[in-house]
Image (cartoon, rainbow, N blue to C red; front, side):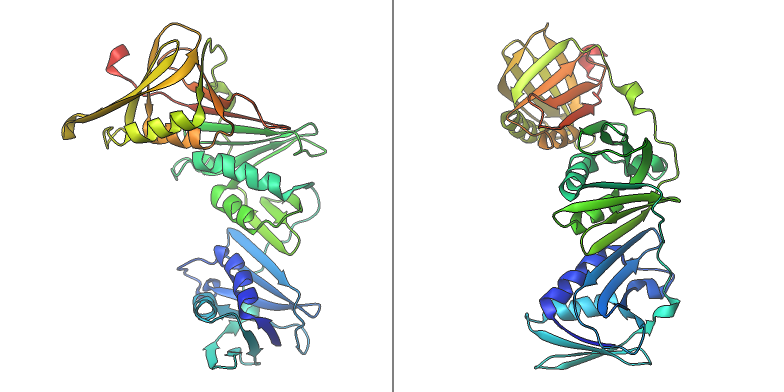
Length: 373
């Protein structure tokens, strides 16, 4: 196999597939990137057996028949990263020796027989959904922060998709926060639901190019096809919890506040909260909300007052300051709406004005304060 490429162009493609290369593996060949000829062009692949990424490059490749060579990913990427943007001649011989030649030098390494590289999942066309890549990116951006990191609850370590003929939903929760993003422009001929690991969704969003995305769901895998790239992920084979059951419906207390002012105040005050609990207190009155925190061990405290609109009796409620900051940070719009029922029930957070063709709702669980213990 022999081809020439810009070092910057090749590096960008390699960094794309490198997201699926494990840093350490019991199978050393998985720490490589597979180079293949694809009808006279170049195809790069990588997998950790859970996530696979394929990138096609429109580079003319000289080869006698099909060629598959696995090249050590770290050394190759580090070499290209250290080079300026210049033409690189790439050569592989029948013994899988790899050479990179530039006007300034020659770099040699030993590859592996690509025939030993694990086969990537081959998905059928049983369930195919065409959508916009920007929609996929938004779903990941708005839900990823709320995914659980607890390996004892594997279903909650992914993003849950429910897609039907009318619309689709992306849901994530870690038991403390919940995000439900409804998208009118994400639809499928028949009802389908599946859970994709958050890492795979983040990689798919990073790989996504502008334009169309073809989503294929088949035999325990989900594939995301973009113009020159593909990401395939093994689905989480666990039932997703009944998230609808924890969303309170009788929220009669409504608080409207400027998002940026509230977020900035919460971040500042949370610096003075206990490092163990990150607890902050919201004392809400008709025209202002007092945000306060204290750390008894460090003898420190802080409070700020933010103007608001509130239409019910005074309320005192506690939240984890880090969680509340993340929720506010992911709400779009100038004004944010909080809906409460009581100090010991979850609060609902939404933008006062939803974006066109979507509805986002975030839920955050309160923490117990001695005020109502």
